[in-house]
Amino acid sequence: MAAKTPHTAWKSVLERDRDSLNVLGMLAMLLTVVAWAIAANVANRLFLSGVQPFELAGASATIATFGLAILDSLVGRSHAKPIDRPQFALGLILVGLVGADYLAIQRLPVAVAIVLLFTAPILVVLWTAVTSRCLPARPVLVALILSIVGVLLVSNLLASHEARVEWFGILVGLTTAVFFAAYIVLSDRVSATQETIGVMLKVFAVASLFWIAYQLTQGMPWTLLARENILKVIYVGIAGNLLPYLLFFWCIQRIQAERAAIAATLEPVVAGVLAWFWFDQTLTGMQIVGGFTIVVAITWMQFQTAIPNSLDSQ
Image (cartoon, rainbow, N blue to C red; front, side, top):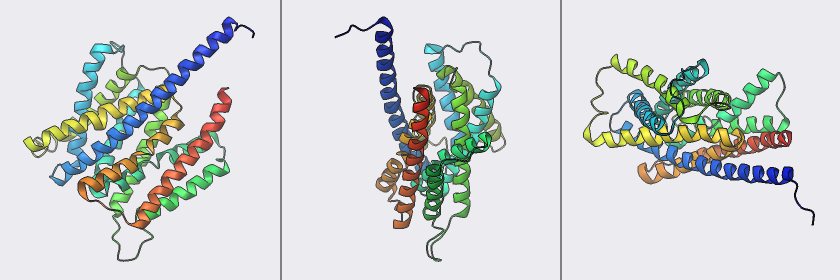
């Protein structure tokens, strides 16, 4: 049996390290999914108690900023590095993403709001097609059609005339998908050469400053600061913002964005089950079919786009 050359041995070590990072990345993405799903249901409970979505968005962003500042002081490597334009833009996108997400969760069943949020990968593919001036492949177009059908089913637009359609909630949910798509695209660019904790600290600092300025025009959020709500607010700040967005950014640096998106599509399922247990939120059969259609379409599309990327990298 021929001995391995130094080049071959080094290559095998790199492949093992890459496989380990892929496994860690997928585990981190699954943890992100669970954290997001639980936080979405906790946020829904806060809204039922009278907390306003934008109040919670501001408080959670501020909590995440303080947490990231502590982490950066302990293990970060971003000291004295000024914020750049992409990071500032990512902070503004995060403002729209979190604000619209909480507003959608307030107006819609939790699972429906998150399903609409996770149509974002379809928008990413369409944006790539527009910027590259190249039509998507046939499987991607099929996935797009399935997603549109799924959105129609989830939103109850194809139900009987007696079914109530929350038009504003659906619009906000689709707007959330637009913000999330922009967040994915810009995060993918920023993460290529940037350190994780320092970047997310700057991003959340921008979002926090925006929300603090907004809250100054609204007065003191007394319901948000009520004793029975404060622990839930802290949880949403940590488990709904700091932890999942930090892990999501870290995952994009270590695994393909397509794989991260595939794992993230589990969140509507987890959130829907939790909402069923906690709030007795039930979906119609048509909404369940629509949500399942969207998840399958996005997963299939991501696999179709991930395969060419993996071949190109070989």
